[in-house]
Every structure is written in structure tokens, then in C-alpha cells.
Image (tube, rainbow, N blue to C red; front, side, top):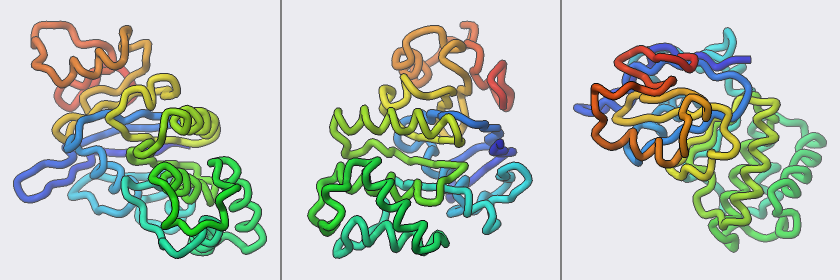
Length: 252
């Protein structure tokens, strides 16, 4: 079970949003770090088949991103997910389950399970328009999990969550990473510091690091901040640092 990204690029007028990224992701949690505008969301939207790349390919095993089979194994939470404010949480998840092709009996069981998992069971009959930002975000996480995805893509998933909800979220993602490929983008290092099996970093559309905590060998936040400072070209790069189109270590 692997996601293969091969020489993926996307351009907008004079801006290169994603620049020839090649990457293989296996089971586990992959934390994608980068400042706003680094290209994280563009990359994730291409992985989810929402944006078509200008060049390059995306496959899950031998399944291409453009196929219905690929979409059936995908769970996605965008930065701003759409919902119907007049729906209750229960109605919304049942509706999304129908769109994903779940049978009604399976959808009811899965909806109940997920509302409990994200701590919304007591609020399942409330209309979504009455929810706080954190509650809406938890509902978004639940809809991404409806079809038991083998590939779970989460774009800034902790936005709006309070500290207690963040802890619950990290524990849940840690469990999901034992069975699925989880790609989680954020600019908040603490979201992934304890749970990510691999750390990916993007800057100006390029993948500048792909490695493990062991490759980093220091505090993750300090290392992350260093990548966005002017780097001494004579200083040795840590394992996992991408130089040009190659990588010293880390699986690209």
C-alpha cells in the first residue's frame, strides 16, 4: 500500500506552485510542514484529484488519481469544507455517506461510530449552523473517515480546535496511521511532532526535506525554522534534505 507521486508540477501564470515533486508514501502518518503559500494545499488538491497537474503522475498502487477506484479509497478534509448549515450533524454524515456509496444500514452504523469518535454524539441533533468552529472541524474530520479510507488527506485539520481537542485529534490520527496512509499538512509543528512517522517540508513549491525525527537529530521546531532562514551553502545538510532534484536520504 503506497502512494506514488512522480515529478508533479503545477503552475499559475508566473508562479510555480508545485515544482517537480517526487515522493512515495507508505502506511503511517506523514506530516507536511510549510509556511502559507509554500504549495501544500495545491499539492494536496492534486493528490485528491481536485486539481489536474501540469505534469507528473499520482498513483495508489497501480490505480491512477483520475479513477473512481482511487476516489473510493480516499478521505479528504480541505481547509474550508462545505456543509449545509440547516442540516444536523447526523443528517450531514448520512448525506455524505450516500454520496460516497455506503448502504443505508452501514451508513447509520458508521455515522453513529464517528459522531462518538469525534465527541459530537451529544450534539448530533443540533443544526450545524449552531456549532462552534471546533465542532464544525470535528464534523469535517468525521466526514473524511466515512468510507474507512486507505489514504487520508487532511489540510490544516486542527484549525479552530482548542488544546483539549488537539490532543484528542492527535491520538485519533496516531491510531489511523497504523492502518492507513495519512498525509497531514500544517504550519503548527506541535500538531505532528509526536505522531508523524515522517516529516515533509515544502518551500516555494519544492520539497526541501523528507525524513524522520532521527534524520533531524534536534528539536523539530528549531530545525523547521532553520529551513526558512538563509542557509550557509557550505554547511553539511542533514539526512533527508533535498538538494536540487535529489535527496540524500528519506525515500524520494
